Image (cartoon, rainbow, N blue to C red):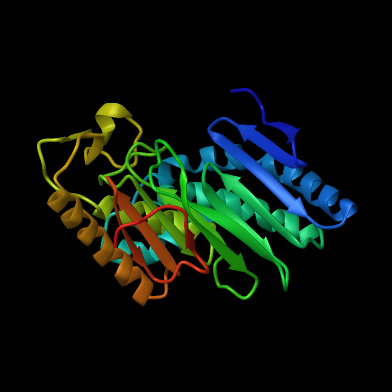
Length: 286
């Protein structure tokens, strides 16, 4: 596999890519501080994928485990609260954990005003006192389009955003078009979005499923049925599936695991917890 690549994008953003890991990074602050942060990100990124590959067999298994790497430990720690009631492996938090790890490396070496690391839609945020950042909420993973904007300020507990759903980069047990979660870290948001999206489910002839390992022999989901296609569903089916996901999201919200969640399926949506200073760009059904 080719080694990691880095490039500067318009707006003084940093692009880092290695195998399946594809990051868009942007830092704000004094020029020297931003450059220090970017150099730290490039240096740290070299070891990210090799470290994960080394522990991949264990990361694909459920249950408790001991991990050597910082990212693997983040993954396991983020997934642990969700494992008490449902099947989950540390892989459910891989994208968010990488984003958190990269952001930590940047803010440790440089006094930034704000920064983000976007790992395919799973985003880690840094906000110095008095700073804020606007994020877009999408309603379809396969055709992302912002339907709402939420402003996260420095007093908020939110430092991570993640989106999951069928048709995304990873397999889903559910049928949600999208589930976006705001949480205290990207790793936790990633794990929670995965689990809530899995819970948005129903049995209907328009829903196609296959064993995960028939699509990818190395999948951490084994022979569990994952969604491969969803046709047009009756509104009552959408409402029922969203109700299942909403119940799970409310449980996570009440336990303090997430700050808010937005669930979407074929034109219907549900919100759990407050989306901070959210402004909806289109009509969203309750």
